[in-house]
Length: 183
Image (cartoon, rainbow, N blue to C red):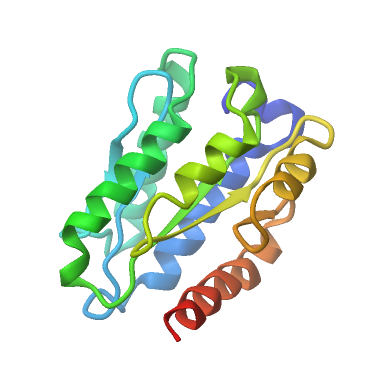
C-alpha cells in the first residue's frame, strides 16, 4: 500500500477512513465494540485497536495512525488478505454470542491480482460464515482493478471508494444490509 500511495493516495485514504471510523464510534463504546486489524506480507493479524481499549482522544487516534503508517513503510512485501479475512471471521464466530451483530469491513487497495488472489477466493472468504457479515471497500486501484473486482464479487459485498466523502454512505449501506439480513 505504501509503494502505490504516490500513484493514487490509497494509504492516505486508508488512514483517513480509519480516523473517520474511530471518530464516528467515539462515545458509543457501550453499544459498539470494534477492533482495527491490519495485515501485510508479515502477518494476517496486526491489531491496531482492541475492542477492550478503543482510542478515546485525538492523541490516541494519532498513535494508531502512526503505527499503521510505520508498518506499511517497513513491513515485508506480500499479502495476507484472505488469511486475514478468514482469521477475522473465525475470531468473530467464536465471540458471536457476545454480540447482536458481527460485521467485518475489509479496506483494500484492490491490488490482489499482484499476489495471485482471485476474486472467487476473496468471495469465498467473505462468505465463509453465516453468522458474520463481511464486506470489502476498495480504496485504491491501478486502472480499473477495483471495478473489475467489485463486479466479480457477490452483489452488495464490495464497494469502490476513491473519494472518502462516500465512506459514510457506504458504511451506512453495509450496516443496513447487515441488519436486513437478520430478517
